[in-house]
Length: 215
Length: 90
Image (tube, rainbow over all chains, first blue to last red):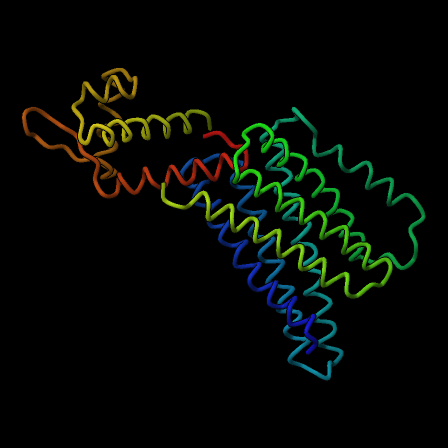
C-alpha cells in the first residue's frame, strides 16, 4: 500500500461523508419546500457520494488483494467506470438544477456541449482513454456550474454562496489538473488533483456548517 | 409548485407572528400574516392538526407554538439559508 493510495482512500471515504451530508440536507429542503431544483441537487450530490464510495471500494479491493488477480483487476476496472459515470451524472444533475433556476437567463446547458462535440470530432491522440473523455465532460459541466455559482454569489454576496462557488471552482481546478496529469503521465499530479478535490468538499462542508448553525 | 411555496411561506409567517408575540390572538395573526379571516382559520386548523401550534383559552383564544412548531421554524431558517446559498428563493 503506497502512501498516495492510502491518502486517496481516506479522501474518498471522508469526502463521501461530506457529500452525503449535503445530499441529506438537500432532501430535507426538498421535503419541506417541494422545489424541484432541490431534487436535482439531492440526486447530484447523492451520485457524487456514490461515485466516491465506489472509487474507495475499488481502491480498497486492490489494496487488500495483493498480489492482484485478473478478477480483481476486472472488478476494479468496473468500479472505476461506475465511479466515473456517477461523477459525470452528478455534475449533469447539478448543472440541470442551476439551469432550471436561471431558466435560460444566463446560459443554457445545451450550450456547453458543442465545444465537447468539437473535441470529439477532432483527431484525439490515442492515449486519451475513457477516463480522459469522462474528465473532459466533467470539466465542461463544472465550468457551467462554477459560472452559475459565481453569478449567485455576485448577486447575493453571502458567505455560503461564496463557499459553494469556491467548492465548484476547486473541483474544476482538480479536474483540469487530473486531465493534465493523465495526459503527461504525471502520477504526483493525480494526488494533488485529489487533494484539491478534497479541499473543494471541505468548502462545501463549511457551507453546510454555516447554514445549519443556530442563529 | 408556486402555490406550494406560497403555502409554506404563509405557514412560516403565521408561526413567526406567534413566536414574536410569545403567543398571539387571531387578530394579531391576521394582521401579522396578512391573511383573510377565512383563509387564516383554515391554516390555523391545519397547523393545529400538524401539532405546530396549540390553542389556550385564557382571556379569549390565544395560540402558542408547540415544541414541534419551534423546531419547524428553526428547520425552515436553516433550509432558507441553504437554499439562498444556491441562489434558490423560497
